[in-house]
Length: 258
Image (tube, rainbow, N blue to C red; front, side, top):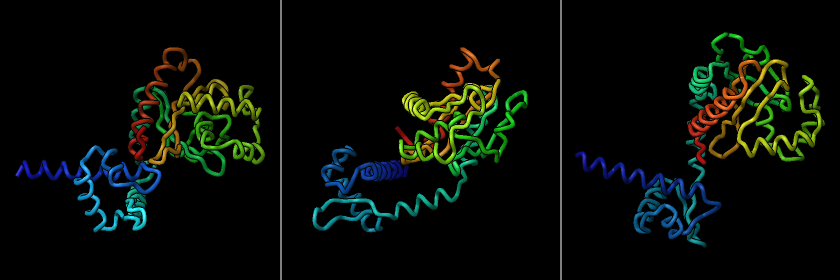
C-alpha cells in the first residue's frame, strides 16, 4: 500500500512539473521540448498530457501539433484567490516582522495612484505612525511602499502620475523632481527594497519590500517603520535583511518564485 502511494505521489509530481513547464513557456510547446524542460521521458510526458487533454486542461493545436494549457486553469486561480484576502494571507508575515524587528509593520496597496494602508501591527512601544493607520492614504513618491509600487510604472505612467498627483513635498527630504524620482526607482528595482528616510514624516524612518504575485508584478508591499533614533546603522541593515526574507516568503505564498 505504501509503495503504491509513493508511486502515485511521484506521478502527481510529474504532472505538476509538466504543467509548470508549459505555464512558463511563451507559447504552445512541442512534446520533445516539454520532455527536455521537465526532464521526463517523452513517453511519460505524452501519457500525462493525454490525461490532461481528457479533462480539458490541455489542448493540442491540430496544425502545429504543439500543446498548450487551457483557460480552465484561470478559473481555478480565480477560485483560489476568492478564498483569501491579501490581509489574511500576509498577516502572519507582518506579525513576524514586528516581532523580529521590534518595530511597527504595515501592509499597503495602490489605489487610484495613492498608497492605502490595509493592515498594521504595532511595535513594542505602541507608537505606530498616525499616517499608517488602517485605511489611511499617503502619496506614492514620498513613502517607501509607494516608491516600490511606482516601480510597476513605465516612464509614461510616471509622467501621468506627476501630472495627476504632483510631487508635493511632505518634508524637506521629499523627492520633488521627476528625474530624481526616476533615478530613485531604478535604484529600488536593482536593490529590491525601498527606504523612506524622513521623506514622509520628520523623525520617522521606514524600510519597505515588495509582495509579488505569480506574474511577478508587485501587488502590495510590507514595511517596517520606527523613529530615526532607533533605526540606524546595524539595526537598519538587520531590518533590510529580515524584510527581504519575509517578503520573499509572502510572495511565495502568492505563487511567485524567482
